[in-house]
Length: 247
Image 1: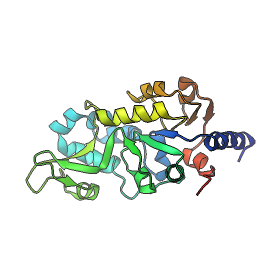
Image 2 (image 1 turned 90 degrees about the horizontal axis):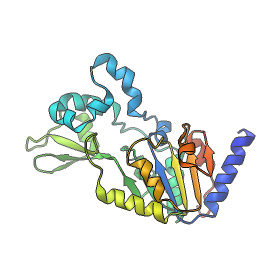
Image 3 (image 1 turned 90 degrees about the vertical axis):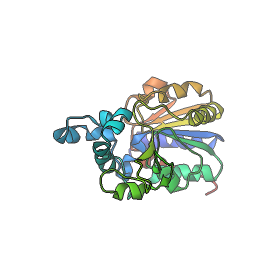
Image 4 (image 1 turned 30 degrees about the horizontal axis):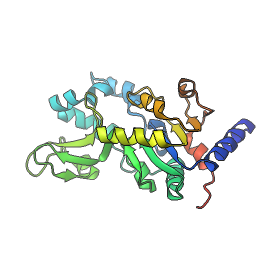
């Protein structure tokens, strides 16, 4: 590890050690080390075969109009059921277990934070693991949806829809309230794997009035939020190097 990286991780360790109410806010970059690509990176690949962009496909109106094409993309590019948590997910779960981390706020839909053991997870964009029939409301798990031929249908005949926030759909207001509350009560906020360009995520940071603001990301996020510490390295590598006292 380079001297600069070692120094940054030492500073991060010191901040974590002196904090009692840490909140983690993460995006797609948290799961890339688990082999889950940001679906936007499917752009070129997808447009070679189709006339739609990923953003168009995962919109509410597209789902209603063309559920077959929606599910073809969704199952292949957004459902990674074999993925396992990486050291970032695992370390955050440990921080929660010892009582230092109060919430994980995530833009991801893969459920890897829960798979790693985190319980206080606020999923801004929903989860691939919750699916409901639009007609009768019956619940279906992710495997049922992934393995279905074409459009997944309920035993009642209705189309099953994932509990994932599509473009043109609003975020769950109770999840937003809980996220804002967690951030406003935190003494440390770690932002990881997100450029914070997706609304309303960027606005959430305004509610942070704690002591330490850290960004672990490869983009310009740190400048945008005026972070105290910015580490430009893979998040699993960075958090994996942190020692959690009380483990």
